[in-house]
Image (cartoon, rainbow, N blue to C red; front, side, top):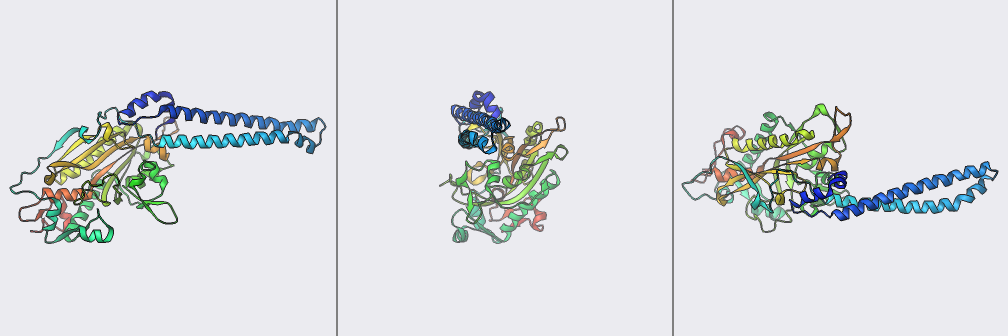
Amino acid sequence: MLDIRDLRKAGEEIRTKLAKRGHDLDLAAFQALDAERKDADMRSQALQADRNRAAKEVGVLIKSGMSVDDAKARVADTLADIDAQLARETERAASVGDTLRDLLMSVPNVPHDEVPPGNDEADNVEIARWGTPRRFSFTPRDHVDVAEQLSNGRLDFERAAKLSGSRFAVMTGGLARLHRALIDFMLTLHAGEHGYVETYVPYLVGPDALRGTGQLPKFAEDLFRIAGDRELYLIPTAEVPVTNLYADEIVDAAALPLKHVCHTPCFRSEAGSAGRDTRGMIRQHQFEKVELVQLVQPTESDAALEALTGHAEAVLQALELPYRKVILCGGDLGFSASKTYDLEVWLPSQDSYREISSCSNFRDYQARRMQARWRNPETGKPELLHTINGSGLAVGRTLVAILENNQNEDGSVTIPNVLRPFMGGRERLGG
């Protein structure tokens, strides 16, 4: 959520910046609501002062010789009228405050100055490439066809559909073990070499957690809500529970930066992706991710984004998977993000790079919603943290990339060297 004080002081400047991402801020509506709330608050304060004066009049009348009952009766009508007006103004202030908060919750984050202009993913700007796509001596198959030829592993969409419908998968044998090996490898790398604290969290969260990171109210249709006696949702990403660990807390400066790595399943309805990536594992309702989350001092967040993105890149480099790094344009930027890098892995079957990780700096946007703060030792006062997160990596898509990039003509798949210790020394699947 944006700072209401900034909107008051620099509303036109913020409106111009938000236009970069295609958002038309209704500044007039904000200013009208803000003025109405201020008027209701001032009227409430004036009425309260009137009530205090009327109440004191009882004592004055008693001192003048009037009985207590007569004195109270004399001002009763005045107090009743003031109380009725005060109740109306208090209700008006609360109603306007709720409407204003709803408006602020619907406004996306202000893009970082480095975010390029553009309308959609076609306007994202490539920053770098790593690795060279393999030249095959045969026509490469997509991951579904590769998995079908494996003799010691199975990727089964039909049985998954029998259980849960479309956009789910069942993995067995060596394929399931390779999937687990990827998770183990990523957690080991990030917790070991990159200094993150391995973290386990609930997979169900309440609405406040989703509001804190920006999924609610904007993206309610993308969430799976659980039927029951409490309002709970399946998490769309570990970002939600991990970042919210610090909601309504004030962190000591000495504890910063806070760095967490967390493996969870993720659940998304993909409401806006009908007809897209219907084949295979690219876009699923349930998938695994190893998520990287950092909470840092404001002056450190730009550097933290670069470091975190580098940690995600290290996974791709260790697996020897060609990829490219792009900075998202304003029109493709996520709702809560101020700046985002996407890492896109090469998929031979599509002859293109596909997203495998998004790494974003949210600055104080999420922290303001959550009231996640740190105590600045120079001032002694609490200030909002900056939050950063990214996939390190999306496990299913990494598995897809390995199957496609490491496939062999005989139907086998070569296991990357760094994964072999997690696979009992096995060098290949199938073949």
